[in-house]
Length: 410
Ligand SMILES: Cc1cc2nc3c(=O)[nH]c(=O)nc-3n(C[C@H](O)[C@H](O)[C@H](O)COP(=O)(O)OP(=O)(O)OC[C@H]3O[C@@H](n4cnc5c(N)ncnc54)[C@H](O)[C@@H]3O)c2cc1C
Image 1 (cartoon, helix red, strand yellow):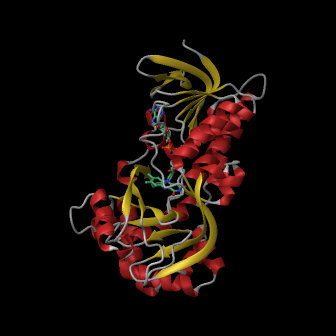
Image 2: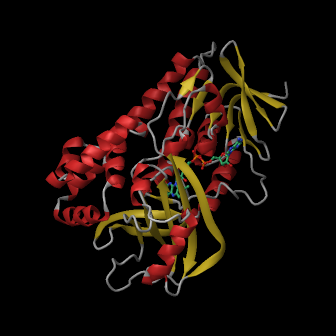
Image 3: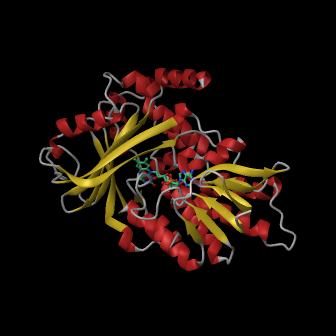
């Protein structure tokens, strides 16, 4: 046995590092194993646009230094319409944010071990008691947490969350300078985070421009290669090809130049969670997946799942006779469904309907958004079915039929 701690976390992303911060602040002995080397961290895992909201920054005490730009509005675009909603937000420098989480976790007493690739759980009598990492090395703990994002080696091996290939959204993003953020015929994107529903740029998904200050912006797109994608894809363009197509055809990028070294790519699964824990083990963040299916907000969701797991571990480890059984850890599942991702199934339904709809319907939807009251919209966004119904039209029947067919084929 190499070593043993209270809690062992695989992955130093927003979920894993946040869970370590919370547990170290409660004086638990916590070790995080991260596959990437510390020098230059994060590299491959520097994948996110980092769009977030003050609710996340406040709840988790994130400093302003890691925010590239505070934004005032959310804009939704379709091919011919747009809708602007006043809503304060912030675009993180995701790399700086990840490094800050590690630094703060260390200050609170957590150990971070880089260059440590976790491969398998170690079990005894059906209970998870540790992990194998870097080939044959072993580490042991009372509670093991998988926070490795979409790779989720521990959760997969334990059959806890079954991330499906067909539900994996792929995303790519470049950072640019010279972007025209207030171009004629388009919404003003100054200090805004914009999401674009348009199958010609992101078939079965969405594209985005997030203003990062002056004339700079993060520009990207994502989609799942599922039925919506197959319906709307009309060439054999790759995800990079789609981004290039947008850059070539949207006048806002006519003078834009890519900022060297600032490109990001990654994936996340858009699917309902399976079970989230077993004896001695919990899965958090994108390993579940916790990401919001509709708009891809995964940072706040992942950190909330981290906090729910930290509270659960604290409760399981507090009595002299520690109880880390699946039953004891099932408190985490309860928190997850009530606090981390309430109404997840309704939001998944709305997501599938949205991305199955054709471009013309997007224009209609945005006209409706401009007409309807904000309360209906925010309720629909929260997965309220009555509010969702108010956004549907009689012409949507074929769309609903397609949705049902699609679900039955799942
Ligand atoms: C292109 C793109 C844009 C996005 N934009 C936004 C956005 O604007 N706003 C938002 O809220 N969310 C966004 N997301 C989603 C968000 O980034 C994720 O939901 C979030 O990063 C999930 O955090 P996590 O800690 O669960 O996983 P991850 O961020 O994936 O972190 C996992 C960590 O585990 C490490 N790891 C992986 N495998 C192993 C292993 N075997 N052993 C040890 N360590 C391992 C990785 O190196 C990484 O550091 C975006 C995602 C993508 C792909």
